[in-house]
Length: 114
Length: 215
Image (tube, rainbow over all chains, first blue to last red):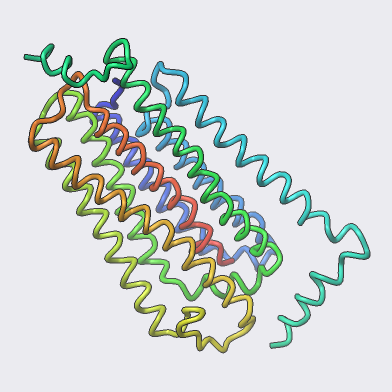
């Protein structure tokens, strides 16, 4: 059965902690000032995905010779991708149709006047 | 001695111990794939409202205790590290080290829940718990309320998984102490470790989504 040597595990753990420090640090950048809110989200999620890949690849032995765990991990990501792609293709395109704009705009207006 | 143990541990439906090991691991991965979609659903809903109610959600994120969240992330990453070391100890048949590392993992898990409880308590005192005590009167109150509904559902679902994981490690540590695992067959350690790493990965995404998207 595959298992990581303590040396590899220690290196992975150290990298994970560095990424944690990096992502917390990146959260204090005032992205809003330059209207770069999306960049803050992208940085945070990229670091999270990197951490997840490190944990899966090393701690969960996804690089071991047995192919089936890799296949199931891939299936999980594919299904998650379908869930997000189909849902986002709805929510991101609602404003394209004039008839559907009332829903978001009236909700937003109600909120902006507390 | 070894072959006797192996004979006793091999279930009759498998050809050999290697096939049984692979089936054990595969079963856990299949479960984790369903868990991915379980958490994926609530994360998807959160992401849609994060886009629609960006300002309110940023306002709400500033009410969370970023420091405690970061400490908890470090604790959880540390517990994944001890699990990885435990699996290695099991593969070498080092019983004492295995039991110690499994107990350390459980203690780190309890520490995480303790910090989480402190956070919940201070959020309760600050009146940020929808349905129970919500007295927030800053900007975007309805959006902040929605954020906190998401926050409590997502973190409580995650915490429930932690409670299950800690219970599993208590049993596995006890079995390891009784000498139930050998370097030839220690699937219980391996499989409960996979589950724990998955719970860690869920938190790796919940932490930035809830605490860090504040600018």
